[in-house]
Image (cartoon, rainbow, N blue to C red):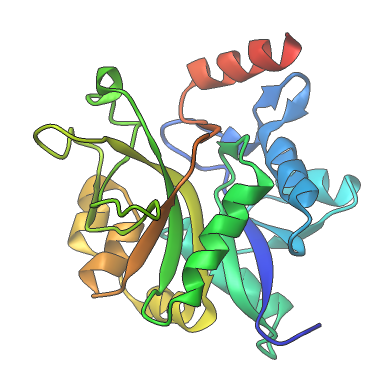
Length: 244
């Protein structure tokens, strides 16, 4: 394995308050976590691991022929969880680009993950992520995480803030954050050593910890977001959509 190689780690915890046992909820007969793992495998850009606090989730992935690691119950965020997994599976530091693909992010394309990794080519960028345009009719939905950034002609931008509230004010594009983070290894290590920040706790958005600490997050605009599964309605939408 070449040094600085990429790896995909999917955090999956069963203790979600908004949607309990989310990774285990069935979409057309298969658990959500299995669908997300399959899409990461099909991208064929890096080895894939699932980091979970659940023996049940781990068994699902292992039975499918995948790799899973059991992590602690008490992590404050998915990125904290994947750092624990990373230090276990790669103590020698061969993996230099770590993709945190959220365990509820369904339907992303291979190219989207590559776009997130490509943002790390800029030496000033700590974390790469993704966004998609959304319509004003969704602006009041707290499950739609908004990212505030001034897009350049290259369809890339530096993220200034993330929020569940309607933002920004005035005319212009509205950008929805997509649950993917590409970390440089040193950036992930730094992030994991920081305590949860006040705005992170208030908004329930882990990326605000990085911004409050002065870390740089850049985003790439994609045309298709897939779906972040946050409600039972989302599960129903995917189930009926995949059945068509």
